[in-house]
Image (cartoon, rainbow, N blue to C red; front, side, top):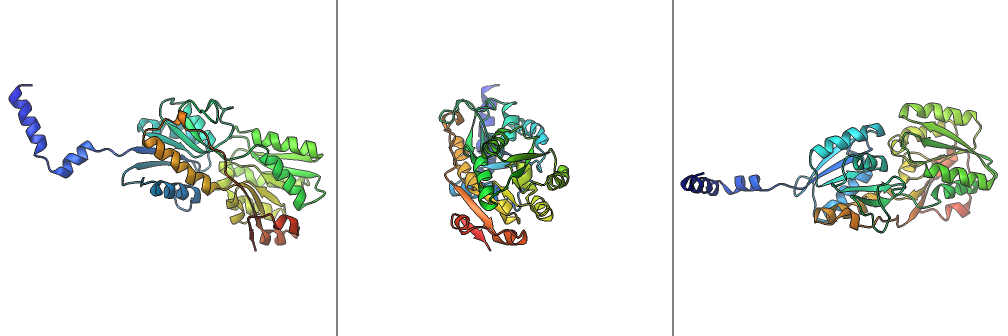
Length: 325
């Protein structure tokens, strides 16, 4: 390029309106969100995450852009969503559940991946250790060791003498640690455990029918993204079959379920925003320790208990963080 042409080109760029020059030179960080949910509307955990981001000064459409993909509980969509998201060259990928993190990690070892609901991340090869993840994945655990066993113990406190407990498990998720803990706890306590395995929402009605026909006295609904999306339907099926059910998230109780014992889902998603903010500011995910849940909460729906003819003892009610009357 001749010198006078270069000068003319630079002069032309300088003469552009300020807004146009800013548009050319400014690109907001892009966040790709792989959600197990159905939509943003009514998604309380997602809204808690967005609130956390705003509190840290990161607002979608203002200084960052968030590109959502909603799986609607269908975990087999995550590999496709991960591939689509990576093509966008995002600054960070947000995987709402462990299967989404596994799908994204299989395609990239450089783009940061953050998950608010990690399960067995070392076993899945996502991190080297909780204190030093070491790779491109970090986030928060959604469970504490022995949680499924404590849910079995809670069943016995609600229904002393129960000898046969069913449990609902999504075998498509690949997460087996909760199932192993529950079956081990039942064996230790001398209780028969009856699995109801599902892969899609269409399997739920048959699963509850099978549990009822098998004569289980209660059901533990293991934590799963698809079960969360189908919480209204699951609560209705449990009520229809007159099966007391224990859940991992309070959202199931808000949907009409009996009892939940586990982490506060909104709190995990709210804390999750801190990871994203740090990474957008330059932190490496491998240097950000995986955090543990800060508390477990017990939520009881007394209306559901009365509908089942179940009287919950005062010793259990007094331990509840909230009782819905």
